Image (tube, rainbow, N blue to C red; front, side):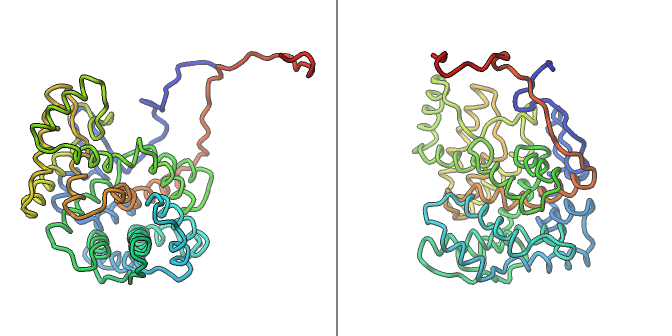
Amino acid sequence: MSGEVHKGLAGVLVDETRICQINKDENLLYYYGYEIKDLTAKATYEEVSYLLAHGELPTTDQLKGYKETLSQGRYLSDDLTSVLEKIPADANPMDVLRTGCSIMGSLEPESKENNLVVIGSKLANRLCSMLMYWHHFSDSGKRIETETGEETVAGHFLHLLHGEKPDETFRRALDVSLIIYAEHDFNSSTYAARIAASTLSDIYSCMTSAIGTLRGPLHGGANAKVMTTLEKFEDPGQAEASVIDMIANKVRLTGFGQRAYATADPRNAINKKWAKDLSDAAGDTALYDIAERVESVMWREKKMFANLDYYNAVIYKMCGLPTHIFPTLFLIARTCGLVAHVTEQRAYNRLIHPSSQFIGTDPRAFPALDDRE
């Protein structure tokens, strides 16, 4: 069999979905018909999580019940914490969540009662608790209590990180970030989860497949790489000169470009506003000013636009997150989107089994040992 090979499946339609719509020409993004600008302006992450799970926004009563189920995910059993305590302090935080998610498959396996909907609604909070428990234990030996009493995933995460109720402005900024990261069509980690689901594997195996894919620096690690780059610059002027030099030497800057859009990532403007608001609230705009200058230079010199990861890095820094755990927020936010795709794959399942075009050695005779050179 021969034909055109699409490396990376670029431009290949592999299935249909009702979950996420991307309008590349007009730079628009929708979850179940709701534009991302409206969702980030009017909804909470919990409402969006429910939307992705059920296809419709929740009523007041439905949202109340959903939040109660979400809160159950904060608890960590002794069996789970004992595993987390054995993970080295220098481990990649994504490895921590991959291990934690995997062990959950044995401690609380998927069943008729503990089904996809129940597990899915708990995962974001559970991942927050696992990550922060390991973070504090590996850093100081402290075994933290993971019940915070917070009503939101964003509040729960920040409370666990800093040990106190978060400021509302910073909590809402993180909430919006989670909404933005919640879903984005058939990206690499989502497709990995759907491939696992197509084999009729359990939700934890689907999630660990996605986590392993998201761990790769070309997918989930962009927000941390953006921060690593921005922190090298002393001020906007020095940043501009350095970026022009990097462009001349064909050095790729992370955080720019997104092949799903033509001229702008619709999520970037939302993140940029929150990055500015948080910088103003913190009384420190130095990092934001550098980021804004780099963004303008990249557009002026290369016509490359900033993507969702770019200003998210500034948001996370302003929220006090250590850079090495930035990528885990991508995963925590994306749990509801991954569960939505696993659900959809199961509903219309066909085993995913693509073909390849062979370009290797022609058939040949097997030589005797003495005849080999």
